Length: 337
Ligand code: PEP
Ligand code: MN
Image 1 (cartoon, rainbow, N blue to C red):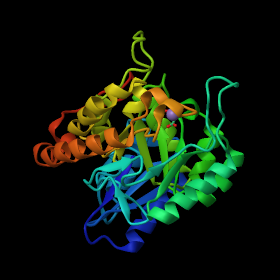
Image 2: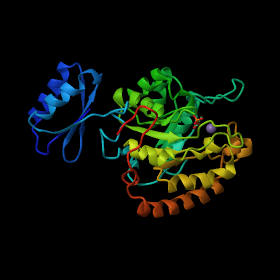
Image 3: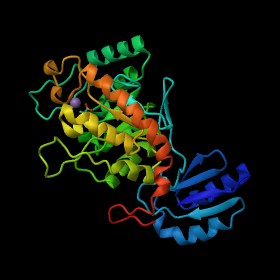
Image 4: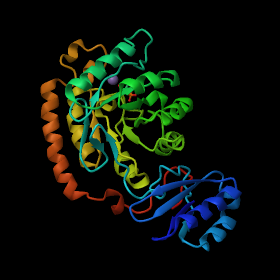
């Protein structure tokens, strides 16, 4: 449930609303917009919805009370109509600019690596984190790297600016709760077998643990197709912009698994309205210890980055407000609008 306070509503009126919610064992979560206060109600609203709605809607200072029927609350656009913009070391994600995670606007690198095979290179661990921190110091760029378990959160947060939760851990709820308390922005990659709704519920774990700075990253899902490593679901981009206020980034490297498919899919992602792109780049992909086949050379990356910026310029004028163009969206079986 969302309570929109009227413009000019007093602090006391908002406090009275919070008190009323407390009486029903519900929690109030405030969003301060530019114009007014919006209070999202967290907890088991269903049994008291009707009663509460009638009580709240006549309280002084309350402009409207709207039920949120989606199971994700804080991440839904209904509760927070304005886009979330995440700022790290002066770089903004989600503000309409194009973020390139690779070494352009944000540096990426894996230190703790989730490998399908226990015999594959597992990453350099903490030593790798220090290299990443050093690269950040030299370039002034913020960094992103993966954290695989709650016990690693502290050390990763010490060395990196953005914590990445990988596809295999999207529903690792203890990790989601831990990164929710880490005080660093989090990029949550879509589970390769996860629906959009499950993905947003996973993001809800992070936000409800106290961290509103979440970036979503579409990285391909598993389908019957085997030519590509995964199937890049670009529908997720406009769909997420409609459903949530969180920024959306696309990773065409892990989605396709093939270097020559990365540029066209990255361009398509930006054309679909993605806030950013994450790609794998290596000075000598044939010698890469992980994912060389999908890694771009520096030249290929530079060529792609130029093309992405061109597409982005065009798209900014063509789709200013992608979610406003769409009608009500039904996701899964449980959402109504
Ligand atoms: C990665 O980004 O390095 C990675 C392992 O990605 P994913 O979790 O999407 O497989
Ligand atoms: Mn990889």
